[in-house]
Image 1 (cartoon, one colour):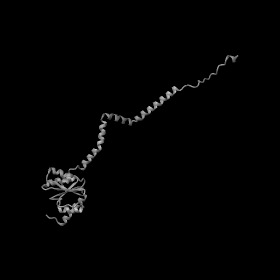
Image 2 (cartoon, helix red, strand yellow):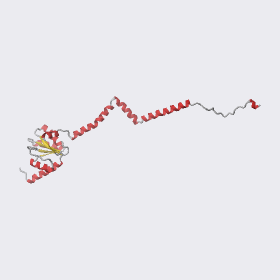
Image 3 (cartoon, helix red, strand yellow):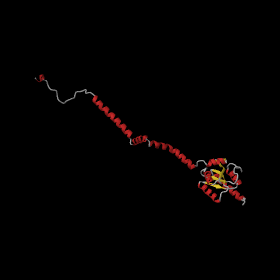
Image 4 (cartoon, helix red, strand yellow):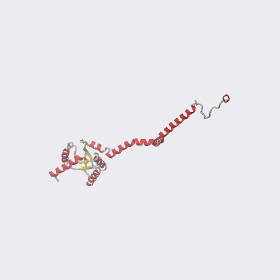
Length: 218
């Protein structure tokens, strides 16, 4: 059934709005899919923040122009296609479609638009096989944890006991206390040594008067 002019205008407007919000658009063939297969693919795409939209190529071309995206030619979207739009992760739609194609070879990526540039079929497949955001975050966390893992392995080595002992001494102020004891012992030793070596220079004084001589008494 042919679309009316108003229906075409409404579809172009709807797709234009979606294209302005999307992070990437993939073009996919879906020839031969059953209604159940299409429904399954749509659900998987929706779960991953993506959406599949099927429209006439002439309307897709007009919507791309309205959204300010690169101009597409019939060669870029040869045959019956669907627009797979990713709204959160730019790779999610391509990755979901690629994963689905492993179970159903009737789905095939034939191009797309990413970062304002048209992609060939090969480029869209490369994009679909790149690590996704979650996987990249996992890899990044792994890189951050790598130094900690190395430190943990050191702590479990024979040197680890020594390192832990130093840490405990530092927490208890052991280094300060031991240094203070050492300085105190040195001061005491120096003081005692000085007292032993100092000679007496004066005669001890007494309270008794000197005795008178016999000549004086007589």
